[in-house]
Amino acid sequence: MAHHLLALETATAVCSVAVFSEQHCRALLTLDRPRQHAERLVPMVEQALAYAGLSVEAMEAVAVSAGPGSYTGLRIGVSTAKGLALATDAALIGVSSLAALAEHATLTAPAGTAVVAARKARRSELYAAAYRVSPNRALETVAPPAALTTDGLAAWWEATGLDDTCWAVGDAAASMQDALPDVPFHVLPFPHIGPDARTVGRRALHRLARGETDDMAMFEPYYLKAYHAKKHEG
Image 1 (cartoon, rainbow, N blue to C red):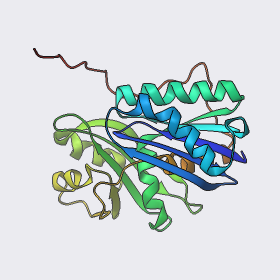
Image 2: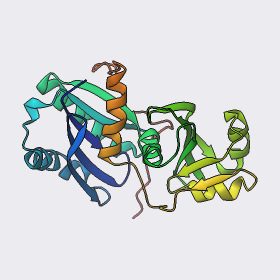
Image 3: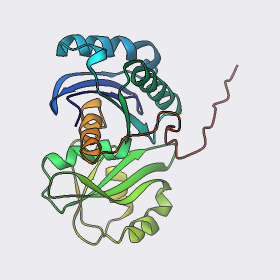
């Protein structure tokens, strides 16, 4: 288990940095401003480390949200995490952005509870994954992250095999509840809630406890869908 861990979240419009020491979050900075990641991420890392009273050289692991999410945001976060890990000889740990989102539910959901994390993608599409809270508050994957349309939700849900009350979290949770009216969802009452560096760090600590790290050379963001560039008008 690493004594000091740096966590980065850039998969969404939120840019977030957290510093963990002895499994406790010592500093958390979050900026909810789109398209600021490239400019603000490194200064936020420096500021969070200063608040925690630690140097980047003290970091034994660097965790980063691996997606799915914004193509540009993921690329910035992963390249920064790799650079910091290489410079400090720290371990690199990728964390699913949906698992980081589901982590919010583990704070209150009883052990054994099923949790669905759902985030809006483009148009009528969403990203979703299903988990179950283990006795030690970890998340066991029931259905891995998938890119879905609202029309495909019923088939996806049936494939999960879940038939008990399910907690739902994320900005697409209400849409999932509307599309699956017969499913007993308990939607967390904070539709704006999203992954942040603190939940990324908590998921990374669970991976570290199992001895799981990522290969620096092979690790890539989990885009899940092909990147589509927008055509500029004018």
